[in-house]
Image (cartoon, rainbow, N blue to C red; front, side, top):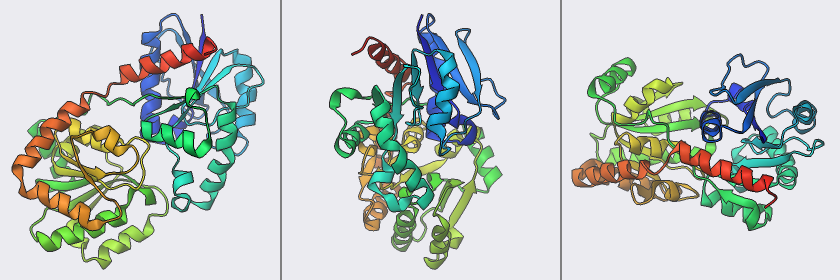
Length: 372
């Protein structure tokens, strides 16, 4: 039987979209393929056993994620495992002295599109890894067609080497009952019908553009609801806090950091709209999660976001604050439009399923092992 490895080390160090991806592959793949053996590579610091099936086993690794010698050190640890294939969900595979096949997932190429959006250290790391990773990989997965085209055009990879496998949606994202919404509102001192941003505080999320658009919205609609900015601090975010003060928005902004995951469905469900004006996304979970909770979304017209939301959200130009302000004004003043987007959003969200993500991923594994 084939022995597949899945590199889950990043799950110890980060929370976010890639970690969700790892968790769901760990859960779904062994159930789809009971004759395969799945070796889950954990950080040695991670005491959790993420295994979910008898055909999985846990292997603790010393090599930390994103170490400068990661590819060499991890290869030494992987070699004795005698894997047939190793999947690297964070796109950086080890060297292949053992001859196993390699599948990597490239979630986005922000560092090539917008190098100034990263710290100097991160730029050096990613730019130093990407070409070697692509050469080493037998096949590349992307989360969206937008990222697949980036891989082809920016990295010169042959089309037959890249497959788009859309991500899924956690089943906990659904319209929350009124009592759950009320509990989360009271816990965070939130009013009814707030506007919402969810994501890491970092440059590509365009929080500066969001605040400028919100200031224009307040000028046009003085009774516009407050803007809730929920997420965690990433990098190069400091000026966003001062910008809110400069725009005179301090009394209308509510910052929520490290919201418990179990509270997110109710937080989405209680919002009048979700705003994600990113300059670039490889996929973009928040609008999909919001739509699954019955909340209309306003998103950037860039990269993968139009692909994810389909015709179920309002698209805006992230370079133009008036574009976002106008879209929010329409949503807040047109109840028929808001209801139409709620209905379409629920339908669109149902198209994203982690079992289907795993099924398509497994099909790629098998093609790679067959030498296609």
